Image (cartoon, rainbow, N blue to C red; front, side, top):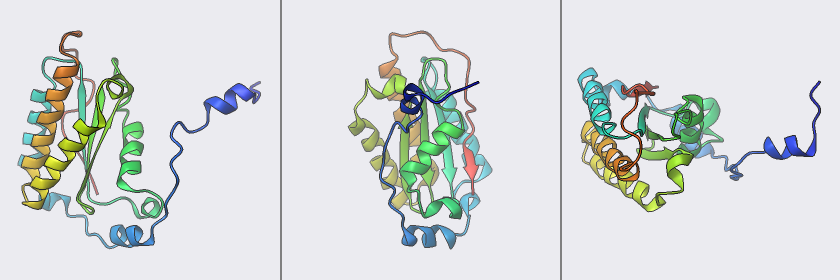
Length: 186
């Protein structure tokens, strides 16, 4: 029989206590957004992104997962911003579950034209947030020029370089733990 103790209560509390900021404006924006992710990324674009991920993962144990989402699901958009959504997908897709805690989620929200990068605990403490912010800003600049595929490939290559720098003297390349193809969500 399992009993609740002080220890279990502490362990099961959320690690990140972010204030929830409900937004009717965000909900309306996502509710009326037409899921046109296929318009932005053709099958050929998706293949090229997968090839870029494969190339960026060479020579180190880091794993990159690209998620392209048209809009946040309406039942979540009122309570979640893109950062919270990226963290949710990081957990749900198992990006955190790599052998060396070396997973990186590159999340793109087409409705808000925002990019989020979520890194696993094996990398988080050894890198600075500024590096990830610069990658996001470079991608957003490309999006504003309507170079969607190039923006994602640029981001994947930059993440690969950062992982290569971080894991330069670590274990050699292991088996691919995450699929290289981008996950296309509505």
